[in-house]
Length: 193
Image (cartoon, rainbow, N blue to C red; front, top):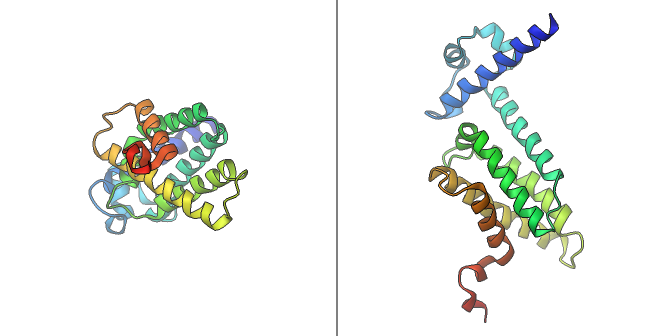
C-alpha cells in the first residue's frame, strides 16, 4: 500500500513540476496561478497544497533538486586535474540535456536570476575549495576570479541552450575548460606576447 502511495505522490509532484515548467515557458512566475498549474496537471488544488505552499514553493523545490544534483556531480570530481575537469563539465552538460526544459526555463535570459545566483554560489564555493587552496592569491581576489569564471561559464551554457545545443557536451566541455584555463590568450595569443 505504501509503495502505491509513494508512486502516486511521485506522479503528482512530477506532473505539477512539468505543468509549472510549461507555464514558465510562456510567462513569468508572478503571472502564474496555482489554479493554472493544477488545471494543466489535471490535479485538484487541495492535492497541490498537500505538496507545496504555492507556485513559488514549487519552483524552489525544482531548483533545489537541481542544486542537489549539481552538488553531487561536483563532489565526484577533482577540478585540479584537467581530464577530470573536462569529464565533470561534460557530465554537467549531459545532465542539462536530460533536464533541458527545466534548464532552458531557469537559465532563460528573461528568467528571475535567483536560481542563477544559487548555481553561481555552489560553483564558486566548489572552485574556491578545489582550485584556490594551494595558491598565494588572497581571498578577495579568489572570490572575484571565481565569480568571473562562473559567470562566463553560465552565460556560455545559456547561449548553448538558446542556440539549440548544436555542439556535443564533450565539445562544449573542452571549449569551456580551454576558456577557463587560457582566458583571452585562447582567442588571440599574440595579445600576450
